[in-house]
Length: 389
Image (cartoon, rainbow, N blue to C red; front, side, top):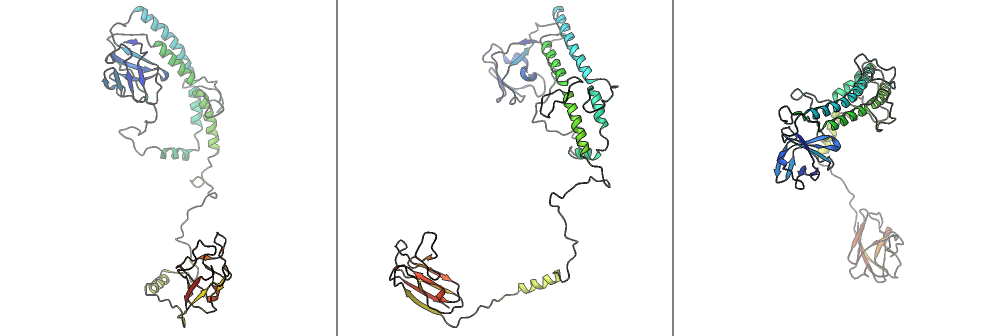
């Protein structure tokens, strides 16, 4: 398999396509494409999830979801039967592997051995195995916390596996099944592989890496693990001891739901029997008696002076009174429009006056015990009718 220069090939992350129109390369001869910024395979012939949907001319549509990737750069590979093993190439591979061995040795030191003892404190230096040993040693007394974590896991396995949703992150894939000529060996990607190993060693960190100081600060795995152990100790301090097999809590800060089914009733309180008796009474027809007036009252008043209120006569009422403006009265747009209201009502209609406007022909009713409680006002000559009982 030979590495090829894909400069000029356009990766469209949103459309998930590789456009070979700008280079003299047949997309059907390309075996694999590597996205350099993420070191992620985005195309590999014969690999599930890394194949192609279609080839339309010089445009290859990918199966892999590229919408979260940058446009490039990218590296391509194809098999032309030329780049086969030779002494020179194998010596180059040996030299690159020697460099990789140094990186692997650093990784091995960071991971540690099964006999590594746990550090004496969460902030103490130690290998990954030593840190995990201390982490496991802090589990005493948090069975309830672990049970809560268990309750957040899926209730059952699916096909013998844990059901997860990986749609929101990039999924790792393996390129071990990429086709190669029989017995072929190349060194084209050894440099990239060594760089990746170096990045892994840096990401893993060294046993002496210290707490980064915050949960969002960039740091190695061992540094973040050291911080996590400190946080774990703080978490344990906040978990109270069980009381009668339960976690004690303080619910005074919120309203607690209660049941009133067993509350005792005071003497003489309503019961189902008494409520049924009331319901039976209410189910029958209720008659409301209203007083019948001895007589009715009707009459007319006339405005003698513009803007001077005129009170209705002193007549006792039972059910109230209705006042109506004559249709020939002055319009509401006049200087003294017709109004009805309490004693001394004015013709001011600006949101502050005490009167209720009565346009010509309109009427208003009032519940009062005497007609004299109602007055009218308007333009000289305006007439108002009233009737009540």
